[in-house]
Length: 409
Image (cartoon, rainbow, N blue to C red; front, side):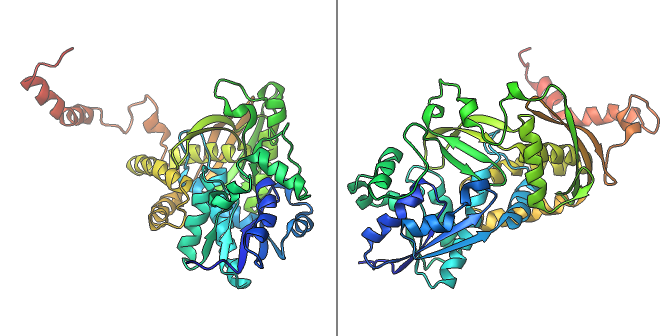
């Protein structure tokens, strides 16, 4: 029979789920010590008073780490270089943050001599996989505590967010959520996601006025366009409007600019790793601008076959990130290819922000492969007679088939 954990490092956000879990763990494992670990990833005011709240909810120790720079430059930008998008719309804001949080959670466990890590992800969601796979990869000896998958949790009446609110009130746990406003949100520097309430019904349009946080509804976006320039070096954004900035500051500024123009708002029903579909609203204003700029720069700097292969890999890369396999050797190997091909992605892109759209309208790069003479209709320096032989050879398999079989027109 497995021994109960002696000390648990809980990935703590200060939200409803983890606030309820802290006191519940005290009851579940008598004598256990609890370390609340919170990661500053650009949540805005959400971490205000986080230490006081954690102690009030039952924590014995509280550790808060500012990971914004690492998050931006080592995680978001690595994913940006791949231009990974899950199911055509999701820029993976929650997915890319979880491995970083879990990595530092494992580090805190080592520093505090804890024998277990825990999280507040439910048994229906993707986050449970992301947290647990990271812990398994980085320290397989740690016990993993997942209350939402513990039968005792359900026996205690904790079956959904409404019952969690009742539990919090009964145990006098400080929370901000109410049953009237029960959106489930996850926010960081890269994005904010919204689930729950009317968003769950695919037949209903979300209540944009109450839902959106980083962005304005497109109807309220300015009638005048705004232009921004983003400078890249080897696939990484390094400057905004001519000013060099660290990654987290650059993203934060783009979030404000993009949010003002309703850029980066997506509504999608996605396929979760565990099998069901879920519907959510995602706001990724800064990330959307960067993806658009990176795309435009890649199109003129990366050779054709390499570009096409990189785009094929991007879909698989997105699935790996979504599935919580950041520390998988396949992702690391793919990253090596992506980073090698990104060495030429250097230059400046001008992006137009207008009514919910970010459009790259100008690109300059010393690494550009774009030849204006070849791209024009002029025939100078281009042997047009070579095209005839090229087409004959390229089309030979189709010609042979046409001769042997009579294809239906």
